[in-house]
Image 1 (cartoon, rainbow, N blue to C red):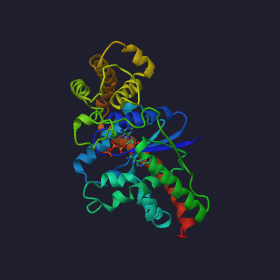
Image 2: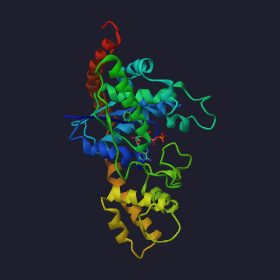
Image 3: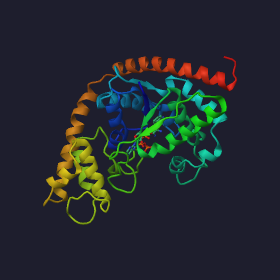
Image 4: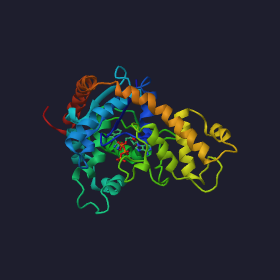
Length: 327
Ligand code: ATP
Ligand code: LTN
């Protein structure tokens, strides 16, 4: 069975972009693949986190995985910091195959290190992509389902795997990326030129999975639209295209059908319809998440860590032998 691995940072509440770009694909892949889904807390601390909030977010992201349809009986769910091999392999890759030249091309570091440039950014933020490569390579991953913003990191992972294999002999699988065609880049509701993001400055950028019906309605009403009044799916209308994509992915209706439903109607009707579609998706999800206890989550994560730990340990033995450590 082919293997898949992916993760989300416990750095805040999940939003529709996280679900439509990544987690929706995980749910559909878990029957076909030997699947592992991680809560990547070591990645989250590359920017500063409040310890109490971090602890809460780790449990909440795990609950969200389960409530969105990741079945712990089918897929392994665990927390990255519970398996020390991730940090260990990251170091080994840092020293053996990751080059400053590769790392300086990574756009996420430039985006996230902020206005002050790299002066105050953590060294971990710079090294973030190598830790992600370690996550993927530890589990012999064939396919990595992520949103478009992470493609560059999966490409780096492929480069590092190939380079390691060339120097030390066949060790790592070279993984492929999997994108969700329409959901790969859900744009901000307040600015269709930037991706929806939990670290956006305005809360009108995103819809979180925990937003109430009132908040969803307010945010959709405020969402920017393009000139004209017809509901058409076109590259010339990027704001509307983004809203139609969200509508289509959550309702399983084609974009053509949505266009037809709104012939002769305007943005007001379309936004009311979109609000209903989002609320109809979020309400059962929120009921489910609220029914999952912290104890249940801790049990899932403990089992997950044990299973992942064993797999990772085997791979680490192989890597250490190849590098020349006495094992
Ligand atoms: P931040 O913006 O604060 O960095 P994030 O919202 O991008 O966080 P991550 O934990 O970095 O969240 O991403 C988790 C997964 O969701 C990744 O696979 C990422 O590619 C995907 N993703 C995040 N935002 C979007 C988006 N707007 N559209 C599609 N996929 C997305
Ligand atoms: N960097 C990713 C999260 C992540 C990940 C991974 C995704 C960390 N390790 C391994 C896929 C595979 C992000 O979404 N920001």
